[in-house]
Length: 139
Image (cartoon, rainbow, N blue to C red):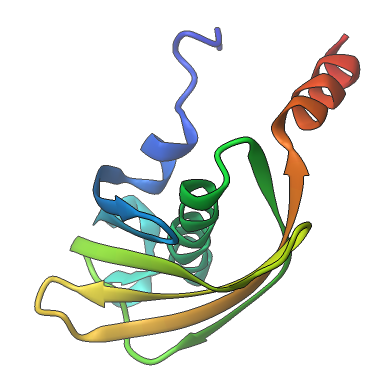
């Protein structure tokens, strides 16, 4: 498959749009498709984790666009199943240091019910260093 036809991370996760982004907070809307679900029409937990993780990462980028967030640890607690339809992942920064920040997030259904909550420890690495490392790894 050529790179032009390869799905993006956003399309794989079913991202519809960034609902809001302000300093230290982000909300992203996702479409839960049947291809993301297992038995009984329940979204696979990895997608739920990915949606919350992406919102927390975007929240850190909103504060420091020159840094790339790298998750050191992610914890997700699942309260109710995510089913096909629209969901909103919210992420915010609880505490920020020079090289590390602590984020929290949650996933809401279309009625505002909390389906899952998450937290993450994020290492902040200068974007230039991450991009240089990727170029060396590729070729």
